[in-house]
Amino acid sequence: MADPNRVVLGVDPGASGALAFYRPARPHEILVFDAPLADGQIDGAELGRLIRDHVATAAIVERVSAMPKQGVSSTSKFGMAYGAVLGALGALHIPFRLETPARWKKHFRLSSDKEQSRALAIRTWPASRDFARKKDDGRAEAALLALYACEVVR
Image (cartoon, rainbow, N blue to C red):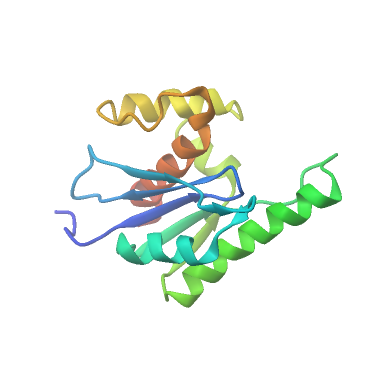
């Protein structure tokens, strides 16, 4: 029987990323938010408030690194967003795991095509409207990360 108080946070990091709160005791529900921004950067205070208010008990964050041909400014902004997520989790004393895209996507038999992730999220949570737009792939990946944590990481 699933712990009714367990809330797993899945994070697709970056300014275009998202957060998803998943309760294994309520597997047909998912709560998703786009990454909170202020002036194009992650809003650390709002990020912390979201995590605290939704009572995350554990988190999984996609492990990322610099991408080839990505500019210095983009890499810096991405690194700052990633650091803000890890800092918020640390400050709130939430245990977290970093997971590579290759590993969690292999579990779901997904390729690097983000549209596949969005399609799977729609099938997994058909009542949710959070994945309806093509640009909602970050939301889908955050949700699937949380589900992966519950199915594999424990």
